[in-house]
Length: 431
Image (cartoon, rainbow, N blue to C red):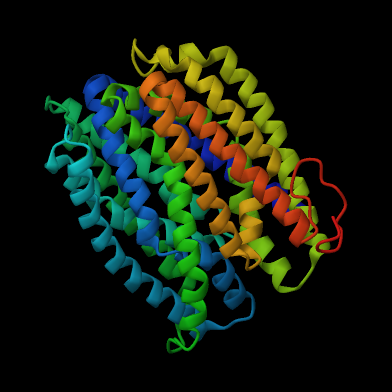
């Protein structure tokens, strides 16, 4: 298990490093070609799309880690086919609804962004939602690199090629054009992923679909849907509120700092990608000792990486921000504050995964809801006087609050310390 976890983490980290590098190149090109105001419009519209992609997935990206893992391990091909087909149908319908909601709400709250740009941003919801669920199912087949290649590497790579093609053609780049290219890259990456997924699952999908467990699928997926929405809102809330309470320029500056700060808990995210199926399998076998080994090892590796990455980002933060444009080094104070929240996140480990994949999605939902309330209150209080610095304080505080709350709950309810300290397991409610 440890060998697989370490090997998978190395592959996942390398894939994510490549994906982040490509993502930065794409955003650097866009920030240069759009200018600060145009880039701000782009990230606000994309922020709306990313938030609404989560409800479009209907929680199946997380529930797939549990059900697909079990069905593949036990050879239950009929249930696997039923789960995959039902997930695809639900995601298609929910994506259309989410796109309509985005255009209606965003046009009302962010009047500085054209309706055309919002429509193209909304078009990205369906391919992004299907990419997330397809990647999760591919992860359960233990194809770690392939499960990240299409979304993490191919999609930003295609976006870069499309941006360069537009630039080489001499066409002016606007926020609407950038969102159109983003949607096109997502569609092309999705087509490639679906082709791979169908080849991998072909032996397991020969049986007629069995939908008899649909209540169980929805019982787990719907709470995960709400949880995922809240988590993505916590990720994108500051950008959206900065666009409404401050300006698109502030949103653009904060988005650059947020992207850099996201490098700190980078290894933890990679570990979560690998450990999700392992957690689901260990819990299904009621092996609490293995759960503890997975959690403590993940937290220690994640924290070590975060400490080194945060130190390097504090030293090189201003030059890195300057790559986005001459005005972007102004976001350095926000970057420093966001790194504090990233360190707390890395310290607590894969606590969110552990709650969700051990059937405690309702408790995770309540904790995320509390974190979201803290985030909204602090953003409304701090953004008007302090701008992006206030948004960074709100983000780091909310991130720390919900991570520490989950850490305490998991220790009390399951008896496992998921943090980098890795205290010995105790009986539930004994600690």
